Length: 556
Image 1 (cartoon, one colour):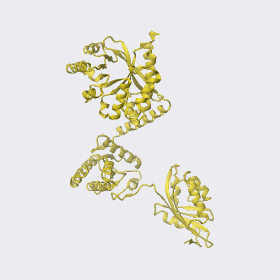
Image 2 (image 1 turned 120 degrees about the horizontal axis):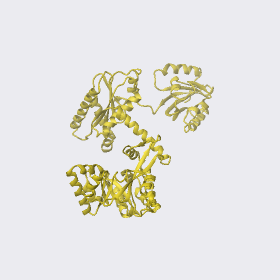
Image 3 (image 1 turned 180 degrees about the horizontal axis):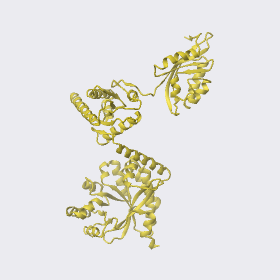
Image 4 (image 1 turned 180 degrees about the vertical axis):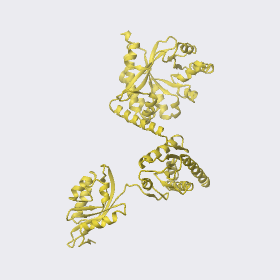
């Protein structure tokens, strides 16, 4: 049935909306279809990219602040309403916020007709369907937006206290193994465990997913928060026992002491960081926010951005260095290990110990590893003109092995540069083998079958040496510098080094001893009869041109 109106005007609708808008979160609106005029709650003009709370030329103005992809459907809907083909309106689409960010809304309304049966007004309500909930029906707690209201009520003068952020460890496993309904039950019971331990001056909120926050604005200290966490953890253990161990889980905590001028968004970011630190450190624990660790985290994130840009710009700032490998018996050059170096945009070299973990965590090690392979094989091919048996060693990351088709890439590049596979040695660290799987084993086997030499690096620093030797059967092992240094200064480790070399030789493996820096160390290492030696005594890592000048220029 058509709804008719005779004595209302758009101005009258505006007056009524202004009466209600201050007491509601949604936005009321009225559109005079015949006068082509629009009126909406004033707060909407503060939130969205509107020309103001009321405007004419409705369709063209809507075009300016409706997300471009969504406007054609909205325009079609308005044409049907103006033509009298529709009596109501209910659409999901996006308006642009003040910073031109898309914001999902649900716009509902009814059409009011004049006495002649022509559409006169479209009146209704707009709400943000992507807006954060103020309360959570699963846990029965207020949500993050409610905590934000409490936080901001202090007007920038935040009193002393803390935010204790609690997260259920591995909550997704509970949902996957027991179902979402049981997961909701665990959320409710965990909320009860937390609520049963907070004081009357503290408030509990459900933040996101499996995380809660206890807000203390009454002078609580980090020590108080730590004590509260321990009580909560004990309550969770009691619940698990009373639930007959149907599900066993733990909770971690992050503590953020209040600071007077810290904004809410920053507080949430820093409390989340503190919780993440607890989870990274093994879970079932609590950490107080550390400004130093957060600064390190931000530096790491900035380094990741710099590295991504460098890769995108053709590996700008990356360089390969080479360190000589010599025969133990006479110190003659036999090959070189390829090492990665990186200079930031200011020209400062950043330690590989800092760069490589960031490359591995981000996955950038895959394209960078390919870059290193090319540089190494190119150098090997060039230097074999002066030393035909020259061999090149290349370090391979386990990320490359497990997350890329590295076997095919190595084969293709070896063939592209025309290097004999027997003159290429791939080095993998012993510690990485602990995470080996069937894919790793197939790559390792494929490299051996292709004729590539394989070296087990950092030998003597891990926990599975014999296991690695038995399973992997490498071409040779490299004794880590730290172990070599101990062997040079302590008799017990020196005898261990002798026995390792003897054992490797009995298995048909070669041995490379790393870290030789003095003539005295050389004499002592040679007495253990390794096959190869690497160390500063024979040359520090250097760029390709420097390596050529030192070892091959005289051969021209």
